[in-house]
Image (cartoon, rainbow, N blue to C red; front, side):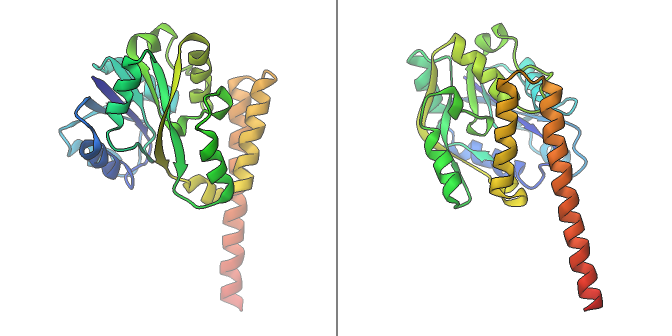
Length: 247
């Protein structure tokens, strides 16, 4: 059986729809849906408490910490880690069981973004390739519970890049399967920041990791870029508002 583990932080707009979707689109192999809240300040927790079918877990903020916290209470033989804005294909759990029974203790789905941009379409196409360079957390991840803990789970030193870091260890240890069905994920961050701006910082993070950057250095790079863009957006909004007042 499969334990679905979803880390959340202020996901009130998405989590209810995702949980309903998982219930409706599973083939009956999901034993539990574990949602791990990292201290949401919106009404995420209130929504989750209303659903008795959900196991709600509290954790310090940080996807690695939250996903490990969910895995510690999971009862399923297979752990399935899923982002709150990603929707796996219909009967996703059956595909996972089939892959597992065929000798693949870990794997993911192919990816499709919900935003029509040629670069995002290209990246989605690349996820069909079974190579570590084509992997990422948005594709979700299933892993045998025993294998997950044998490898030490997610490295909690990573505040970003935690999915890729674990997947790299999985590729080195087991037969990793890319299931040839597409998961639909949100492109909201690309739309908010800009496709090329966000892709550029992801490329910088990937390259710095390859040349030996530490987890905190990767996070500082990401945090610095995001702060700059957010400040730029607020400044642009203020200028626009001021122009409307004086125009």
